[in-house]
Image 1 (spheres, rainbow, N blue to C red):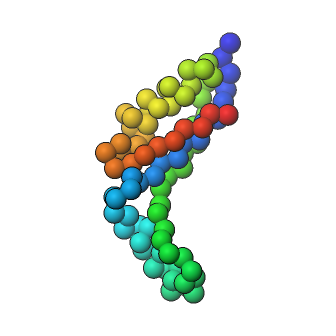
Image 2: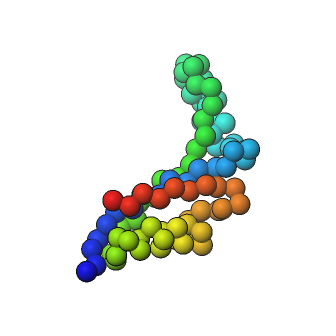
Length: 82
């Protein structure tokens, strides 16, 4: 039986990849008086509602990340189905 489920996908830059957006955010926080911020790394959060078999959902979501949602050369991703 098919059921609808929500998946959460977290995409982050791999270690060693420059993050100019994170650097700009860090600088802006410093200018606003948040001097305790040492570093900011930015990423993406994607929610996907999908129908199907929960057992197959994680594999399908990983396939979506590999083909479209994440640039696996410079990004890591993590999938949560629930």
